[in-house]
Length: 259
Image (cartoon, rainbow, N blue to C red; front, side):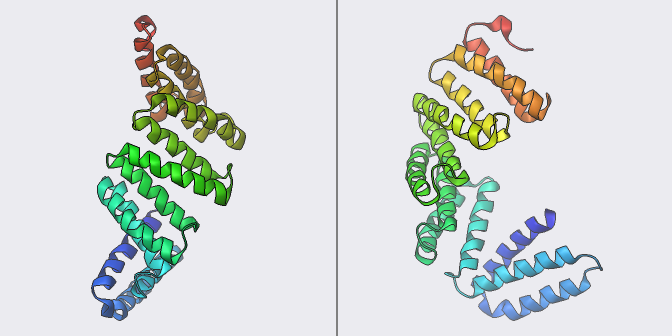
């Protein structure tokens, strides 16, 4: 896993180098070959990762519209977001999206993934309403292209509900998560982490919509499921403990608040 992550990061750095100096490709290939030759026996996986990264960098040198170059740009944009710079990730995906639409097509899976990431980082950068609207548009496309029950469509539905709530419409988010819950249960089962995540969001937005007692009861039931599936000390379980205490207090039952 570490080698894979590092290969992706170095591919991005090499892509930047080749964009600035395309003539450096021959020297870069020689450097990669030298590094591969210096690896101890048995490190085939590391060599393979280096070769894959080299291919990514070389495809970038083939031109900014090469599919490999688009994939590298996507990785760089996503890495910026994961590093905490949501605005930079948003701007990079916004610049990448029209290129992907032109080269790959507007309904290509990679193009739709870029749209998904653009919407998410738009929200994380502070514009929840724009993220909501982008996911609403993306959901319609994914339903048409992949079907209503495909994993990609269901993830888009989850994010639409999440950003709907963050945009200030708690009751609408509650209702959307309520619709999503039986879909997740049918796809993955009632105790799958993805299903539990929907139940957690449903409980939270139920409380935010004005039903503290209902949120309390849902979090109490959810806590037992998290303890059974993840264990009593897992961070997600502890987060549910906190939510249970919070909504118990708001429901006026401070005496029942967990210690």
